Length: 223
Ligand code: 5RP
Image 1 (cartoon, helix red, strand yellow):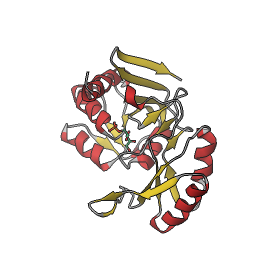
Image 2 (spheres, rainbow, N blue to C red):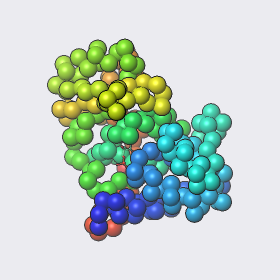
Image 3 (cartoon, helix red, strand yellow):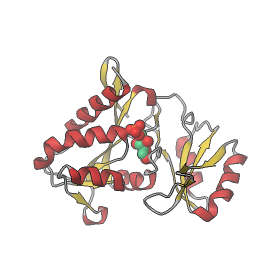
Image 4 (cartoon, rainbow, N blue to C red):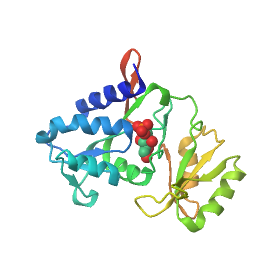
């Protein structure tokens, strides 16, 4: 199966976790796009969704799924999202699609995080994928120097020759060269550096379940 077919498979498998009658939290990315397509078939069974990005909001609305503001609703039963890496404990790197801050907010508002990913995302130690960090622009260099002291190399994410601007009006640093062996401590530490909006380590908001697309079918990993 191709990677795209594996994404379709896990996107469809995630429907099983959507609770009829309840608003669902929706992430961002190419795997989630498959889930959104599948969710359209259930649109009459749910009041709608809370979305983690402008891109997902547009897709949901185009398919006739109502999008609620996170402040309009209370706790959500489930949040469904992809990952750039996931380890054996359900800790993840996220933010390849620059939506990490809103993803973490919706994940924190949800009882369960269902991660949908193909098997290329499964790692032993987080850090092969550069860790995305959303920063206030004036702090980018300072935060980059702090990562250098930890052995990382921070690069400002660009788009069309300009620094990429997130849905929150901020910038992204992609930090390579790290091996994140203690994701809980790493997330707590980096999150309190001045100018860091969100670090793309999801340890405090880890996955409850991962639906992993493999050549053998969908494997359900619970943490
Ligand atoms: C977006 C994310 C995505 O979940 C992550 O980048 C995985 O994306 P894809 O499903 O396209 O591989 O964190 O900010």
